[in-house]
Structure formats: C-alpha cells, structure tokens
Amino acid sequence: MKKISVVLLAMLLSLGLVACNKDKDDNKKEETTTTVAEQKADVEKSEGVMTYAEYAAAALESKVVIEAYVQDKQSWWDNKVTLYAQDADGAYFMYEMACTEEDFAKLVPGTKIKVTGYKAEWSGEVEIIDATFEILEGSYIAKAEDVTALLGTEDLVKKQNMFVAFKDMKVEASKDANGNDVPFLYKWNGSGQDGDDLYFNVSSNGKTYTFTVESYLRDKTTDVYAAVKNLKIGDTVDMEGFLYWYDAPNPHITTVTVK
Image 1 (spheres, one colour):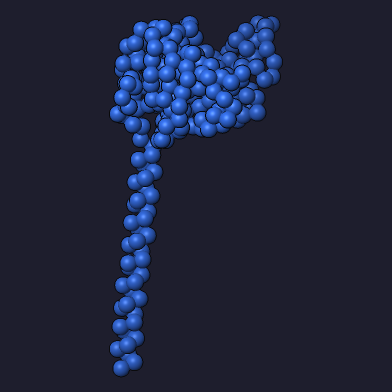
Image 2 (cartoon, helix red, strand yellow; image 1 turned 30 degrees about the horizontal axis):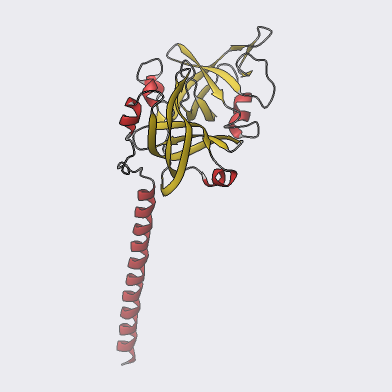
C-alpha cells in the first residue's frame, strides 16, 4: 500500500514539473516573441505620414512629415537637437530640431518619433530642418548594414544617413601641417587639438576615403575617439557609423576595431 502511494506521489510530482516547465517555456517564447516584435520597424505609416520613398522623392524646401526611430543624438543646445533616425526603408538627419532639455533626455536610441519639418540639402547632405516632433509608441534599433562594396559607386548615396558598416579597410596616411605622414588629423586640416573632430583616411580596392569622428556625436572621452588616436598607418580596420555626406561620403564613425 505504501509502495503504491509512493509511486502515485512520484507520478503526480512528475506531472507537476512537466506543467511547470511548460509554463516556463511558454513564457520564454512569449518574451522572445515580444523582443523580436519590438525590434521590427513599422512598415505602415500613420495617416498623412510619408513613406521613405515619398520623402526621398519630395522636392527640396517642401514640407515633410515622417515617422522614424532615433538611432543616435549628435548634439543639443539652445533647445535644439540634431539626430539620426531610421525606419524600415531609409534614414533621416534632423538638424537643430526644436527640443526641450526634458524631451532631449527621452530621445534614447530606439525611440519612435513623428517629425514635421522641411526637406533641405547642405553640401550634398539631405536633412530635415525647422522641425518639431512628438514621441510615439514603438521601439527599433537598426543593425549596421555593410556598404563597403558600395564605396565609389552611385548607389552609396541611397544609404545616406543610415547606420552602416565598413569592413577590412586600410588606414592611409594624412598630411599634418608640417607635411608629415600621420594616421589622423585634429580637424580636416590638422589645425585643431584634442577634443576637436578627428579626420582619418582609409582605403578599399585602391581608393581612399576620408572618415570622421564627429566630436559632437562621439567626444574625446569615448572609445572610438581613443581608438582613432591609437591608429597606425597600415592598420586594417572594421568600422560602424552613420553615412553623413559632405560633397562626398564623410561617414561619422562610432566604432573602430583594429584587426
């Protein structure tokens, strides 16, 4: 009798553990599903909001209304914010958008915003100016898209302002104010000092490009600033950053890895 009772008790405990584990598995699946869902940018736009294709086709100086997700903040001053944002199809650069200091703190990477402003261009960089925004529900952070193969092609500009990656590029010499070969410059002409923007040359397939660590985006206390200061001519590097434009591609780099 005792033996039968023990067996029955063991069976009940086993069933309980199975049910408990199933609940845990279901919870894990639910959590995973939620996380994946949060990392997908909405394709559908709200009423009156442009798709990225419509924004890209809009005339300069025309009014634009877009929805996108903050990817990084470049600067804030005088109640104005400059930032990068992205949706499922493309990217946007908001230049000096009206923003209180309180709202600036809310614009963490992934935050969904609706922006109303005017499309403009400065030295090839397409941006939204004189803009206002509102924060919406939703979250999305884009993965860096490898655009190394697009360097030197007309297709690269289609990725403007996106979070991108460059692979296996070689650090080339820059000339300082004295004509010496150096791996980087403070400011574009070497006239700056520690804390200013860093400019450095990198090459791929025999062509050389100038990349930048924008000090407003990544200041001298950041890892990428230190990494560029430690570069050596001839180093092979992988990089990530935002595809800014200044008459030509001038990526604002946020990470550098020496291989």
